[in-house]
Image (tube, rainbow, N blue to C red):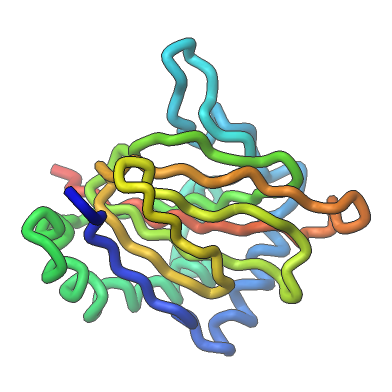
Length: 196
C-alpha cells in the first residue's frame, strides 16, 4: 500500500466545545489520575517493555456516566458524516460502519515522551490533538511507519485511520522552564470496536 487511507479534519471542535474540553483536560492532567504506560494498554516490545513513554487515563475508568465528559459529548459528531467519509476512502475502511463500541484514552506528552511504532487493538483509531498556543515543545508528530507518511501535529486536529496501520509518535522535547505546567502535547485516542 502506497498510502494509509486516513481522514484529517482541522478545527474539529468549535470554540465553545474547546472551552469545555480544556477545562476537562486541565482536570484530568493530575498526578493522582494519570497512569503509567502499563495501566493504559501500551503496546509492548518483544521483551515485554512498554513502547510508550507518557501518561494517560481511560475516560471510562473515571466516569460512571460518560455523558458528563465534555470530550465524550463533543466527540459524538464523529459518528455523523465523518465515519461515512472515512468508509469511502478505501474498501478496508468500511469496517468503521460495523463498529458499535468505543473507548477514549487521554494521553499527555512532555519532555522525552514518545510512542514507538505499534498497531492498535481496535478496528479504527481516531486521534484528537490539543496543545496550548503558542506551542512550547518540539516533536510529537505522527508517522505511519509502513509508508513513511508524517502527519503534522496541529492543535484541534482530528485524524482517523485503520487501527492496523503501524504508527509512532516522535519524541517530545520541551525546555525546562515550560515543564510541569500542562503545556505539553495532549492526545485523546478514540478507539472504535465491534463488540459482539
